[in-house]
Length: 273
Ligand code: DGL
Picture 1 (tube, rainbow, N blue to C red):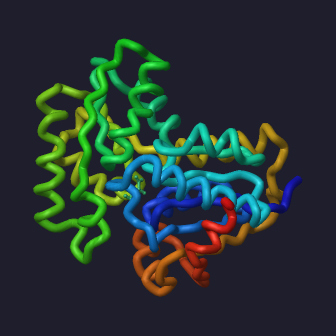
Picture 2 (cartoon, protein in one colour; picture 1 turned 60 degrees about the vertical axis):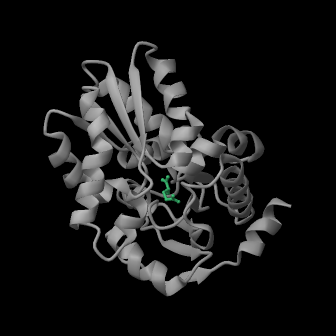
Picture 3 (tube, protein in one colour; picture 1 turned 135 degrees about the vertical axis):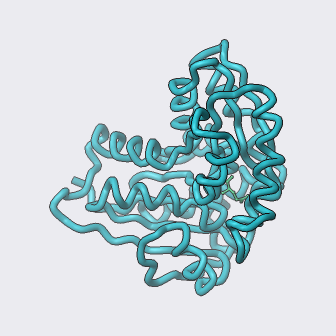
């Protein structure tokens, strides 16, 4: 039995969709979630910079004595996964491998689409993982720079979002994909929009549930689970404004958010030094 918390991080609140599934799957575990709002968004930044941010946060969470780290951000997973796993002493789980696996299993015509941030598309990790599982799958990737700001706006389900989804979906529909990876933590929030645009015959893949299952399996296999009879607690850290985090976070977590603590970026930078 291991009473330490699980660490989860993202550039902002998008990773709360992953935390949501972890809290439902593992109600007896404690979690600490860090949102790096001061440096959001990661998606348009160069990969080396995103990798640097992820390494700082990984070291910071490790110093908080977490027992496992979930990188609940597709851009950070794409940019930094091998480095985080080799540098940190605790297990690190990302959100890309579970989605790549689910997409390869789901596709019938072996044409898969990927919608993601620019950083995630540039990193090319989905292609590597998909082709490691099935070298015959065609992966069509589309960067969607307008979606994260729209989903975080006051009107996430408005006309502008629908228009952007239709524009980004068009090349994937032309390519005849039967499976689309929603490769960004924000996208599950507008899943019905994607499903309507692509139609019922296209399978949408996103990783929150698969990632939570991987966290659960890893804790069990490494025998670092907490007592199953207890009720876990969860807390939040942000490099941005705690009140804004609480307000926006509710929409993503769909569970209560109590205290949110501010952490200065300089503390993260210090952790990696
Ligand atoms: N969390 C990021 C991701 O999943 C999206 C937000 C951002 O660009 O920072 O790629």
